[in-house]
Image (tube, rainbow, N blue to C red; front, side, top):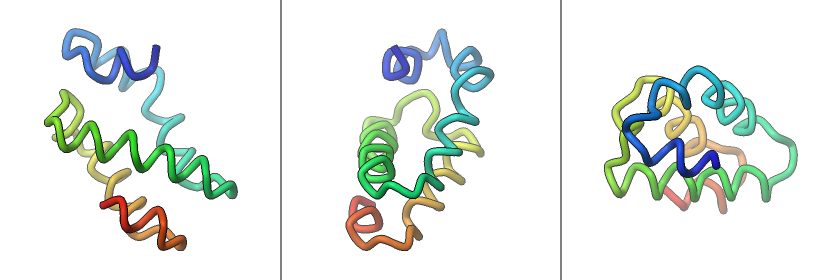
Length: 77
């Protein structure tokens, strides 16, 4: 459901209002696999120029993950 909201430009505001803060919070998750999956989702959305790919909060999320303490997360970007 989250992926569908991210990729559908008609739902961009709904996603930002209800899910963006959750995604941003996951970037600080102590479990590396959570951050890895999040990084893959963000990278895929950016590479396909999804509707959120130019949103400030989404770009900050990408930048935060690109500077993650774990190398496996960082190399996704």
